[in-house]
Image (cartoon, rainbow, N blue to C red):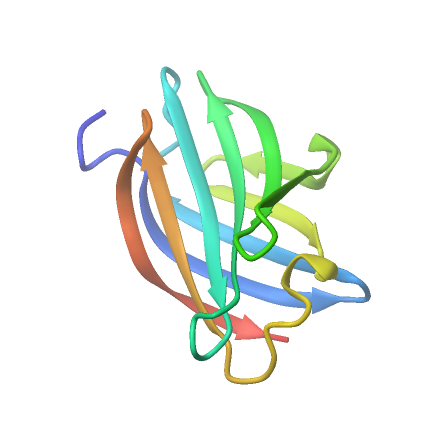
Length: 129
């Protein structure tokens, strides 16, 4: 995958009842071959509590929708019906519980991975919580 394919341009999140709706806008389309992941890294202000929320694609199709709690070393997998994608936009409807406990002033950035390697990190997130 070339570094010009599927570049994460913008990430935004909003609260919708008990759901955290994350929208990932990419430059181009989801790669049609190989593994591709987009997600959020969320942490308490002192980074003592961290979460990783992600959507994984294989050969252009969503195969995993998850959150990982670093404190508890637990991963929760969600139903793929919470993921939609069209052209250059990927949307994931995570349970708000995935970021509970991080508190006000939390840190949140977007990331992407391609074929198991970090592709981008530290992408700013527009929050509307």
